[in-house]
Amino acid sequence: MNRRRVALGLMSVFLAGYMAVGCGKKSETEDKNSTASGESQSSSEQGVDTESTTTEEITTTTESTTAMTIIDGHEYRDPQVVSKNVINPLDRWEIIRDCLLKNKDYYMSLDNNAEDTWCYKLMDDHKQSGSYEYFPIADYNGVYVDKNVTDDDKVVYLTFDCGYPSSRTPHILDILKEHNVKANFFVTKMYLEECSDYAVRMKQEGHMVCNHTVHHKDLTSLSVEEIASEIVDVAEFFYEKTGYELDPYFRTPTGSYTKRLMKIIEDCGYMTVFWSFALYDYDQNNQPAPSEVYDQFVRRHHNGAIILMHNDSSANEAALDDVLTYMQSQGYRFALLDELEK
Image (cartoon, rainbow, N blue to C red; front, side, top):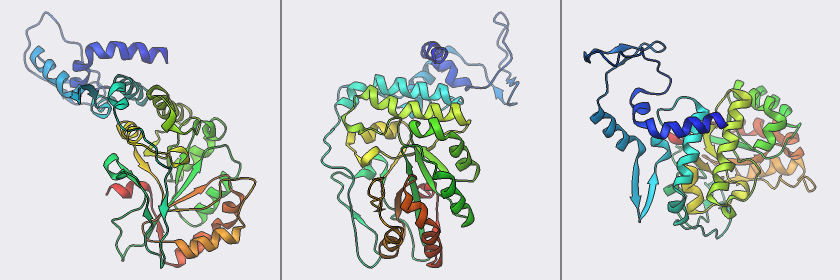
């Protein structure tokens, strides 16, 4: 971590040249005393040509890649623009963290009023659920249902929140594999500390693994620094433990949300994913009967549904095979979250 922070400090000085050439490209060293010929050099790793960069060009690149603007009197740097050419995920996340902290005054100016946690409105006759959102979450790259589905393509998005370690995960993965179903898992660092092998299996079997924070806290009550750590630390930990990057989707613990929080999440490169169908399956001491889980799917399924389940639920584990069999018999397919962006 110290290495990366030292590198980050140096990067702020040489950012223009760094962005112009591109992280990961090792060009041959130029002879400083030679006259610039204007000819391109061969990259030793990627075989691409890199033209000589003048001081004037470097200045222009700095202005465009830092994307620093003034919004309502506050400095703002777009983390996705600043970090876009950085290949190493750990370096990229440290740049994003640095931008978030430098944008603190801007974020603090945004509305942080949490009127309620996420609430959806159940409909009859298998119509899509509505919502009680108290501001348009789509304005902050948020989604709770696929509104672009068509009658000739019946699709649902199965999501599992993995807040806490659970030995039920392998059996759930077995059932998904038997049905050739792909799902989307939201993992915390707490989960990964004991279950990183399960997360590797998720990736190997074609599922998505997404960000669910470090400690599963209500983020709306935290400082900008704390929110940045809750998001960035788990992303870095996942890469270090598994060699994979988290998929670019985020679920807030308890479904809490504000404009400030969702803007920070968006600046980290994530879509915030809520849900249009959920089960009361999160209380380990008050689990529904497996038949109740099945009945909920029969009564409440709808096209484009984003379904929230929990990986540590005994009821979900027991009912999942029957649920998948039923949904597939109704002509539904199970999609990954990246379809929401197509």
